[in-house]
Image 1 (cartoon, rainbow, N blue to C red):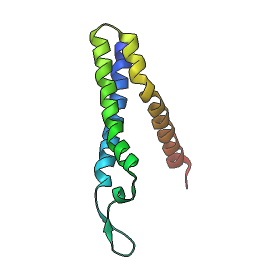
Image 2 (cartoon, rainbow, N blue to C red):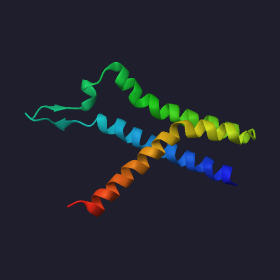
Image 3 (spheres, one colour):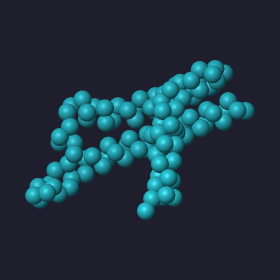
Image 4 (cartoon, rainbow, N blue to C red):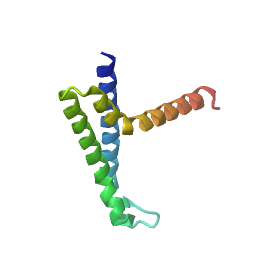
Length: 110
């Protein structure tokens, strides 16, 4: 039961990261007015490698989630959890850090 809970928590964290990555990718193509009124998008300043990684990261996370579901269907729950938590654990730490700092600043800031 605990293994299932960890699995779905890892899927949720990875899906949250996918949503952030995809929204970042779509917002990068949005044009905005610069300081002198010239309309351009942030993607125009990116390298080809940067544009590639903008879409590769969400696709890689989808592949990781798909692979972990495949491991789960083959009754290899430990491998599924390890595969899911390799990218999810650093993101969970950063979400806790950002949330904790935000709470500290809200509670004790002036």
